[in-house]
Image (cartoon, rainbow, N blue to C red; front, top):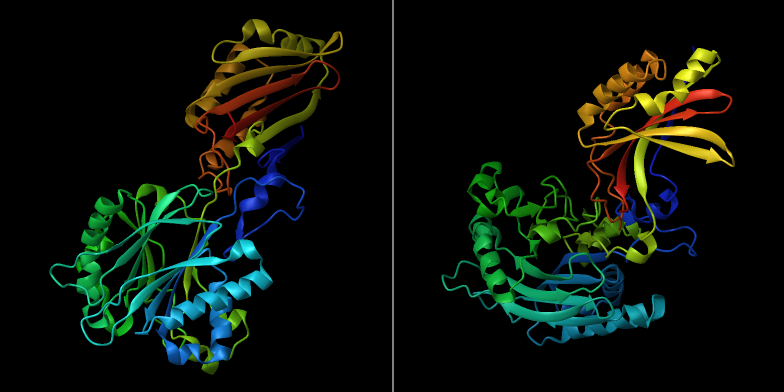
Length: 450
């Protein structure tokens, strides 16, 4: 007796769903531009410590050309370590960046800016700068943390953005440049900053980002136990502790993204968090790269809103089918197939499908909410309606059920609107009522669609 197995992945709409898979931090786009999009493009957010950014660095055109190219990657980017009492360097940076994107991307890519007050206890003060594409987001509000106990060398500063085309539309980007000698103390205080920000902005979703100096000589592994930002379950850390965010010979994970709020925590595009190694990407030698900064930018992407119109009539599922290719030939066995409507019991329902005036095949279907009930229900069907499903067929179905493919994590398809029926397992027996008389079992779990 011969058996074969047919596996179906995600149904007919797989081609349009591949819009959002990620490769090396980049969403894979439709290769055919005529295909409708599954969702709006993601929003790319960056944080970049440009190491003493002021008039001196701005006066070097070759360095500025690279900085502008780096910044043009982002829809929103915060710039750390701006040291310029005149404020002119950041204004010039914005002008140069807009001139660049107008030529290389288009007018829709131009940036607006927000800049914090000058911060720091000493005469060497810094500012946080924010650059954002005005076609993508709007600024709703800004806020400087009220550091009444003088914990921070430079108080955290937040900007609230409204992004109409992403799954989380209102969020805050909080900039931090933590004092190296007080890294543990300042990080430990950040949950209190988050609480104050949520009260001020009336928004729970906050991206706490910046140069935390959270590694190497400024941190011991045991210090993490004393940092409430790390131990508080409200917060999600995106940057791994072993991700090097420094350009020089050191290998330190100084720069971080930490998320507060459930919506933003579930809105990050998988595998989009990385340190952008501009020296490698732009083929810059290391000695020149360290003149640009001793930090790499870190970046993440926020998922775009699903295109409901595109997905409205589509249903996708993950399934397997086991078919007994041995054709029934005895009259008594054929009679057993025709006897199925009278021997089938709940939860199975029998459907007869016609080919013109003739019966073509029969579907016996049950929607089960417990994956462990699939085999017992099929065995119960076989006891009531014998000689339809062979023991070998049931054995292979059992193998696939036990493999976990139906209970594995849902595929993270960019932009997909997941079905409320993801915990329903449709178990369908199909028997042909014309030559050749064969039967199969298909078990499927719906992924998307109503």
